[in-house]
Amino acid sequence: MGEMIVKTNPICPYCSQALDKMPGRKKKCPHCGNNMYVRTRPVDRQRVLVTERGAQDIDAQWATIGAKQQAMRFVDETEFNKEKDALSARSGREPSDFDVLWTLHDKHLIEHAKMNNWGLYRNTRLAMAELLVTDGKRRQALDIYLEVVYLDANGPSNIGGATNPDLFKELPPFNPESAFMAPGILAEINMLAEELNLPDAELCGAFLAVGQRACKNLKLPASPEEGCRRFMGERVGK
Ligand SMILES: [Zn+2]
Image (cartoon, rainbow, N blue to C red; front, top):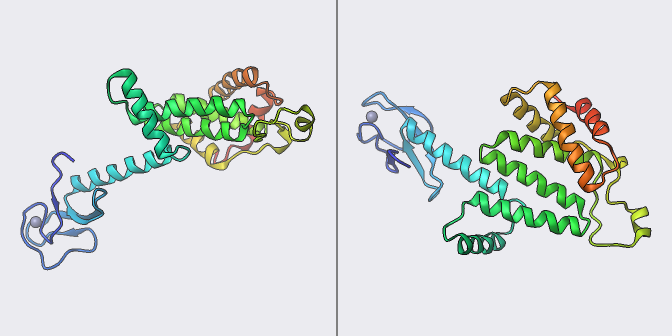
């Protein structure tokens, strides 16, 4: 919060003069002429009157809360706290939320792969990409988003631990016929590629590199080239 100046009463956060009433929105102080901002403070959900800097601080606090909620989407709070305790016991210091979430996602990946739950595996990879974005690691995030698109091009299914080969014929773990491309993910990739100044050729190269690794590790039916062709064809807003 730093130097944030906050007034919950109708008092100007710049000159501390009393106002007739709490403004409903941004307003110029009649005493000193500075712009006062109205915000809801995350800590106690109080409506407060703040300086421009204070408004920016509160907006940043809300953005952090939003990113954390997004990153927590596929993680249970109890599980999170348990992993946090285990990590701090092992390293002797408090782990970051990023480290806790990353470790949990890694564990989930292994479980989902073991159970042939490839839809869930794909969701966990997506959560990892989102987590990297919240940590400012955009290039790494991009690679994982591309991997998710490649998984989607292979039509992942949740088999739930079944091992009967007859069932696999009816419900294959991957089926490119049920492939789909999520517009939100394509838009996210476009945004990252733009921020990172990646021309289409390099984006394509990154897709193929990521795809070849996933194809080899997971034995996917649609080739990286097929996936890339579909990806480049369906990119929106380009
Ligand atoms: Zn004032």
